[in-house]
Image (cartoon, rainbow, N blue to C red; front, side, top):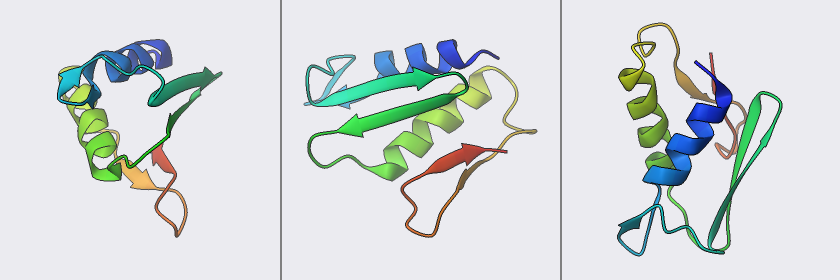
Length: 81
């Protein structure tokens, strides 16, 4: 599992205005080594991001070994453990 493939998966699957992959300037994804940052200019559901990440893990048959958890008390940072 490569972090670049997860970034590509998120870019293709995140829906903006009901259209998948049409991020425009509303949502940006950036990758730094082994960390992906998703930034939104407006409202963006954290649950939706967690849902897409779980879908990716299931697709690559690693959902049994990795989990998506909140890394801080504000629940605005998620990690795979």
